[in-house]
Length: 272
Image (tube, rainbow, N blue to C red; front, side, top):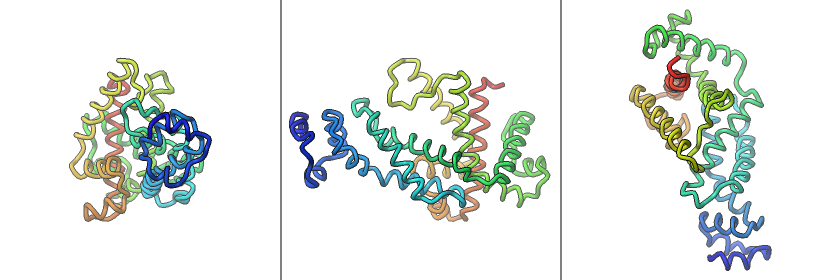
């Protein structure tokens, strides 16, 4: 549908057949050209599947999360706002643009509702501190045995605590990037509005560093990270793909994020 035709329809209502015949890209373009609010929610609803996928994926990291409906509602609010801010002429897919924002909104919801029990947060902090200390002392990632010994735990208890701290690690990795911005670091561009050369360079440097960090992980840890963040599979689905238990996937995920945090924190602080 041309811009002229779209303009002529603006404010006059749309039939279901007309809306269904338009691709998401056409809906975006027409909405941007006309500002017709009758197009906004049909456009938002085209991506409700993406919201549900992220909601189920994030909820699957920790068993005591809020209801999926609460997460979906939060995601839809974020999605509606993203529709107004997104520029389809910037050469980036809307799915890429909005996924980061939906995940961020879910993490904010997790913090507000305090989904993670206090005892789990405490154990996660202990694991964080022990891993950072051993990383500084050894100049490498500590082994599970070294971590358990530093924490004064049995191997089985350490593995259980590691699995339970999976969501804490997701939240704290996200906070690592937020802290850089809030404490005077350059804002990390998301690739959608790189208007300045320094933004593009910063983003590329960050991506290169993160790629190296992921490359330093064990093969099974890399697989979990890829399936969870790139393929958007849930922990249960990843367990089925890798033919191991869900607790084992949570352990691998938590350990991988722990290592990435150490690596990226070293990069962000200049190796201090």
